[in-house]
Image (cartoon, rainbow, N blue to C red; front, side):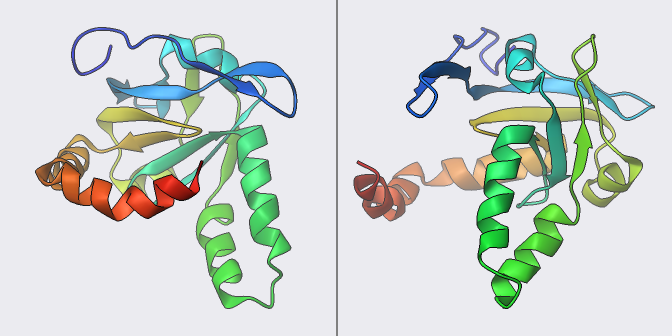
Length: 169
């Protein structure tokens, strides 16, 4: 369930390369990581994750969960920068070096390692956020702090994003 108590509509986009519809991740949900490190994901996202996932340390002190195909595409771009590039090496170490592959089980759960849970303080209640091509998993207090920061001045963020958004046309 989203924050409003209603389920957001299923969202799909047409992949221009494949001509196929793929699901995207949207919405914010409250979930629980159990004692074995398992997290049940929203049912509407599970089809997109059937072919495998990659879980890694994310930015802003949260966890990133990618469909394996999206993670692979991102990783290939980073690796293509060459190991001679210090920024590429650092990014590889942070994102790729902390990555773990997994599969969603029949109950719609993924397993998050003790290592990643410890580093990010993820135990018990968590906030799961769909951000189009990835999922973020947050400690509720950290998510609240981030939300307060972002919603304090959304027009200022929009202004900073204006040029980027205009370039995306």
